Length: 400
Image 1 (cartoon, rainbow, N blue to C red):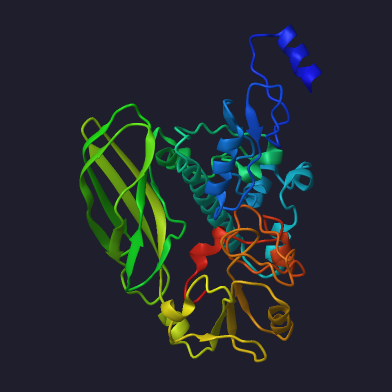
Image 2 (image 1 turned 180 degrees about the vertical axis):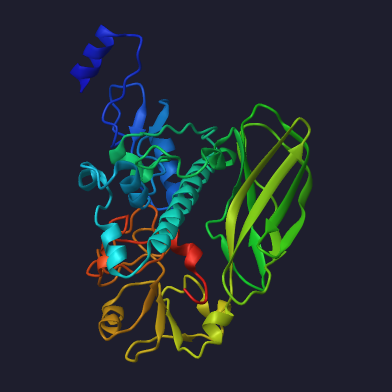
């Protein structure tokens, strides 16, 4: 590597050079480059580590904010007059549509899954970017995107070169001054008070004077709005958390998606950003006649406080559903007997599976909650190596 970079600088001294781009082990180049793979629930810590490692070199993150989507197979067939020669070689994964069809889904339903995977990718990219901005050394972000067919699964474009979503949707999270939500959780119980911590990564060169932070939360039927904080004064060049913002979530019978918008107005400029926020109804769990238990040995989610009517599962019997934060032999035995599990936890994030099945789950960067079963033809064929993720949150309704 030393020879190659020194020889390259001798031949063309006007360029900047990087060594091994994936490991961050920079010795001879002009950048610290790495592929920062980490889950959305721990990416802020990963960025902190790489900022400390880089020294005085600029930090370049390759394969950054990747979140796979389902391929746009039907439109490809329509445009190409059939399945093109490159489909099997480049599609990720190539058999996903066949698995959908084998399960009886229609073209319209599969297209809905595909569209949701686009939203999932957008939301995951936003989460990675905002976690990066939480580090006070990260002033702005510049995203580049490969457009070859092989890499379109994680990118902005589909195989036909069409945008999957508007890149401007990410602008509010990437700018020199960007509003972010400091919390990881963006879903709240319907009918109860929700709390978030707004924050700003502020590097546009101007101090904030006479600032006013306001919010709106808009759903299909409900619009909430208000002022979160006034008379804000902040110096340019750091990351700041505002006072906690609390608001009452509408009481609904099912899961509802809202768009939360934060706007910071001050002397000289205005910035805004928005996020999807979910309200979920506990009525579905409590009043459906089902036996729903929880298994949370580390008391991460404090189920006894949040859901006082829910019973702790201690093994040995077969409730309808067990919500678990760990994969144990008892959980696997329950599953093999026909039980159903909602798994909240993976890898080295805040909820860790470290008991008998420490290597059981290899969640990818964009996965949230989906219990994997690679023997199921549909699950095995989905993106993210067989693991579902946020692309299915829109289907978190009473009847789906």
